[in-house]
Image (cartoon, rainbow, N blue to C red; front, side, top):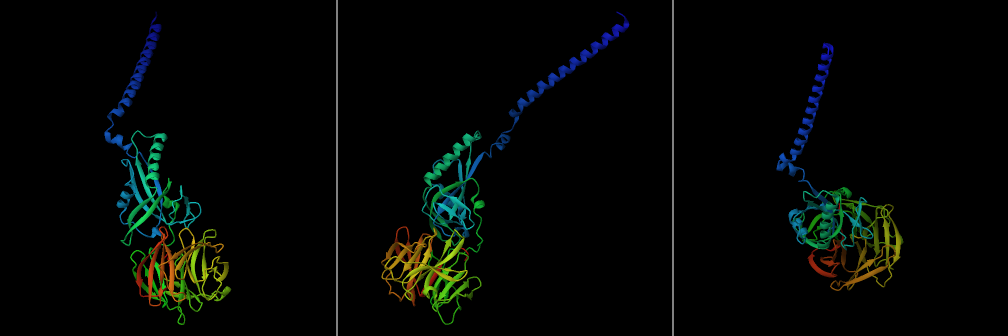
Length: 443
């Protein structure tokens, strides 16, 4: 072997050694990396593990129907107490927390579908027979740290929702609202929602928040606020709409505008906030109507309100009609299909039904088909026996109850008729002759 061949051999050997060393280093790094990655979970702290599982929870919303009217404008004073009442009958609460929300302003339409004034709606899973505002709660379920699959999560969701359906099908709860008076409220399970119902049910345009009152007017044009819980009556103002006539009947729009009929047949509007009366261009005597009882009914098909009126003894035969407040014209609906011949005052229930209180011995509460004028039912009030055509009276629906104001020019007896039990009790007597009444969420 010559020197040139020797040098070439040494050069090739040097390259082979270097390549071998590089291969060994690469293998060492791969093995080391695998070992390190495998050891990382061993050295994680306990807190680090919890941080990845502590938010493993489910949340959903439960919607209840109630017999509360205009609840959105009132404040729940003790949410914790209500939470305890809503869960007191529930088994296995170790993983579920219930947070009471608020009332959602809503009125019912057909087939358990409840519709807000802003046309948002929700369908109850079944009939609840409660026609007041909806109430929502937020429910949170803490899941086990190992429960990540959709099957596992669905299992827990169905378990707790079925418990709510079963144990909160019907409830009586005590609520303290913003007037500091404890009220017994009926609630019933309606439906579940995966999103906050407050996003589905926008707030009403009305914010003033005193809708828990009934407004009444006496024959001397004194306008009062009546508290249906305490029976307290507070004078707001004395109206000066007319100097020659007296109030005969009153109706209140949902917007808060008060419509007042005077004994000369003239119709006025009254703004409670400004205390101002405004004469309308209504022409008395249309279709023979001069004096009449009245009340507003919502027409959900057109998103408007109709003023329903019922004739009095000055213009028989007795019939039902509507007064279009836009053009101030009367249209006859129908003659009553019974032998009733008496003055009446109208009111509506939260589910849109029309009722009339007919004067007589005894007074009679009757449900009327607002399309045909057919009298669907009659409930005599045997304790209400006042002289016909000589009494002042008014009639208003509040929650699931009717308030009846009846007396003469020197006093008014206030009766409460419970529509569930069909019983009527005498609440109190005041020294004013009440001739009109009404409620509104905007007053």
